Length: 373
Image 1 (cartoon, rainbow, N blue to C red):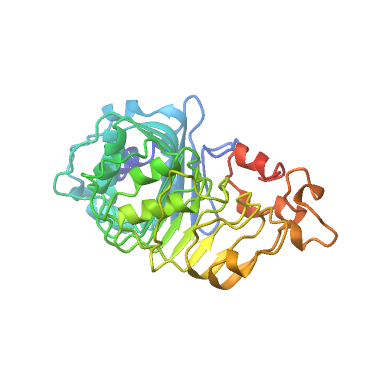
Image 2: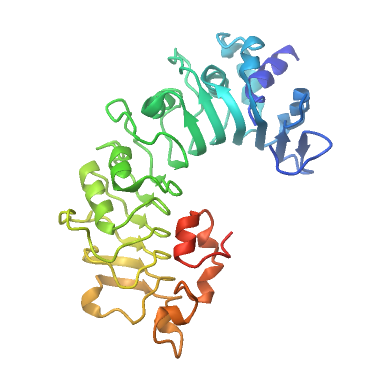
């Protein structure tokens, strides 16, 4: 029992369910999902024992600092003594959020989880403080999916390579949103040899310069899906240049929910798109005409929910197998211009689309999406 208590002290003081509940933790009747919200002034951390049998665990710390736990947990203890306990856990998905977490505590938890069957880790609404320790011998979990949302790191752009050293190779999906900083130390970043999906959506300050700093050259050799929704992208050509510099060859590229210019900026050089690219999403981009400089050939091109006032001519489009134009003003009978539909030019069918979730207020206003969630 003392072993289990030590393990929980290390893993659990890290997660705020929005609604107040009599008990900080709740386990569903199927023992699948367990959620803890330690937002009370004097939280009962022992309630987390309820989550030991769960597959999907969500723990939030109520926005408090967890510095106190450094005094109660031996970070340097050999986690191999708890190996059998950790291996027996059903845990597959873990969310840690709403806390100010010392790096020593976070990475001590990752060491212990190295013996678990954890596959998905989400860190959100966290401030990671202090210096990250160097991994010695034991690596963290072998994750397939890592999501970071609204996470700040006091170590600057070195946080990603430092985090990589604490994880086993094999990460397939990486989602980074509203996380600072994004200007990685590319010379220290390890190659993501198995990463097929990179999602940098909902980083409105990213832009071309940030994208160039984030897509470290030759670090994403098998990347297939790249999402840049609401990422401050102004022209497709900006992304093309970043892909060429980084040597990235995605098959699918999502640039929806950006405030797009139809023509390339004068300072943007011409660019050759990756030959592997076959799907491009430019929906909800405020476009009044088809952008210049698109790939010559695509299997899928999504231009839905823009402000196109007429059907694009064939010479304006790439050779495309599946073209989507739904939700543009020219498809509404009797409409002569976008502004005659709603003040923003967005057709009503697009205003409440779930694709708009997470858009910035600026873009929502641009597209007349005041009803977006």
